[in-house]
Amino acid sequence: MFLRPAMIAEIRRDRVMTGLEDGASAAVTRTRAIYERLRRDIIQGTLLPGEKLRIELLRAKYDVGGTPLREAMNRLSVEGLVTQSEQRGFRVTPVSADDLLELTRTRCWINEVALRESIARGGRDWEERVLLALHRLSRVPVVVDDSRMNPEFSELHRVFHAALMAGCGSRWLMDFNDLLFDCAERYRNLLAVIGGTGRDVHGEHRAIAEAAIERKTALAVGLLNDHYEKTSGTLLRAIEAGGLTGR
Image 1 (spheres, helix red, strand yellow):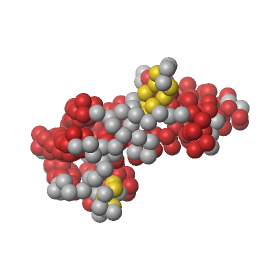
Image 2 (spheres, one colour):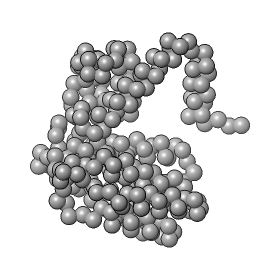
Image 3 (spheres, one colour):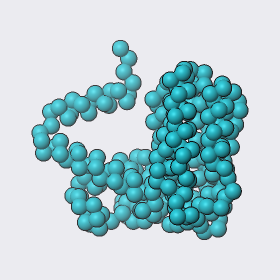
């Protein structure tokens, strides 16, 4: 049987974990926990772009040792959410207009491939998954307090976009899509004011889902790309106006 690199890595981790003593296993768990907390705080904007990640301060804040903290930041640097230099240590990766434009282009490329494959390969289970995700997403507001992204919307938004791609049959594409989604989510969460755009976001999602379910591939891809580019445009205007914090 041919094993993909991701599968080989998983087998290796399983073998390592099998031989670990309790203390080593606990260390792995601590590293995973602090990685998830740091990642969430970066994506949600609690840790701002360009902010220096001082080991001692973070140890106190997260009540964790220096070793799992460094391991977690090394992992985040691989994902592009943290940058590291020998002289300056770790920092949250800055945001910029150029980075946002590149991110948006890449999302359009990757998601077009995944969506085309989902439409071509997806069956009734895929259709039902998309419609259920759309229904749940449509029931929650995008923002709360008129100025803050609704956490429930953020999670259901992720589920909806993942559902659209889920029929593609490629875990590689799905994993890359998840990473790109998180990078884009960080930009959205950094908007100082995200209301007043005049967009019908729920309507955009409904149109994309309907086109996909009806197997109107070109229309679905066009609507999805337009959806991303509208969000990117709003964020670019915010960057130019100084409305993104931590630049």
